[in-house]
Image (tube, rainbow, N blue to C red; front, side, top):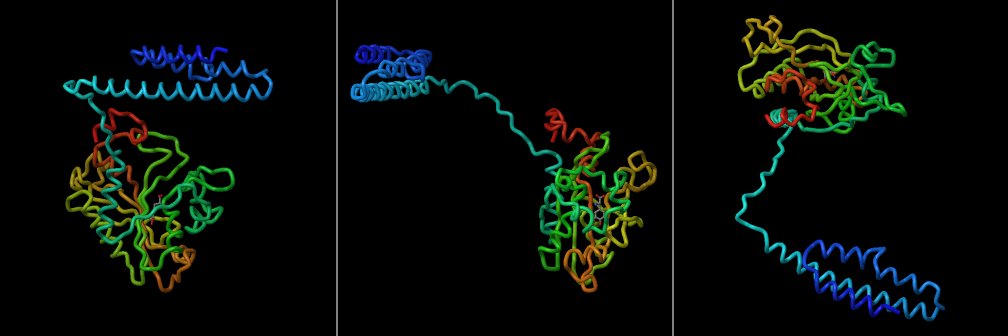
Length: 334
Ligand code: DAH
């Protein structure tokens, strides 16, 4: 039987290990599944049971012994290797990442609204149709639900959708919180779109909702103006243009006096002097009802703005598709 031989041979080899290559080949030759020690078990296979037992034990013992010596050797070797590190060499440069421009702008927006007493909350990106549409006064068959309008919807198996608007969180929080409610909901939304320089299939929105007993359009206007002034760090003039959203009444498109030409008219504002910046309105009584609140007692305003667009304005980015391009040359600029 060559247990003793193998033991001698292995210890001998271990004694003579000089580098990591030797270490690796020893491990492979002796300690691996196909190594010499495991091989010994094949000799035992056909022996009568008693002999099998004693011999088996011996082989196990051997394996343990050799492994212990090997580990000690390995440890020594690692220690030695560490000592070889030349501390005078210059360090390898590390590539530090940076926050995505959208993240930076989102955080800035959150900070401003938090100063005004709004809480930052989140809603699910996989949403049920009720919260994305019905709860917001967009019943089945409503034109806003069809593929040409707000409802450029990705439908999922089982009836859920990828939310097309952060407004879908409105009723969730009305049900969860007691008025006064002051929240913003930043997050990703999805639209079934053909992409181009200003359209993406997913982008970021920031929803705002305030519900209380005495709320007026003047409050809405003041909050938005203050927000935009903080955000653009300058005086800002805004105007509300009548518009239509199913979940607000009245509804507005909010324009900002063009910051490039101060309203004189330029290419950035298509010569109108104004730039459309967000949608807003007074929360529709049906939506307040869907949130489990009494629309006779509670009123509120809501608004929704894209995070992508102000980011593009601030950093002069001319193609929305760059945000998800993973292009490091683009991202490293921020
Ligand atoms: N959800 C709208 C959109 O995606 C934006 C919006 C408009 C949100 C008016 C609102 C609102 O809360 O009041 O286009």
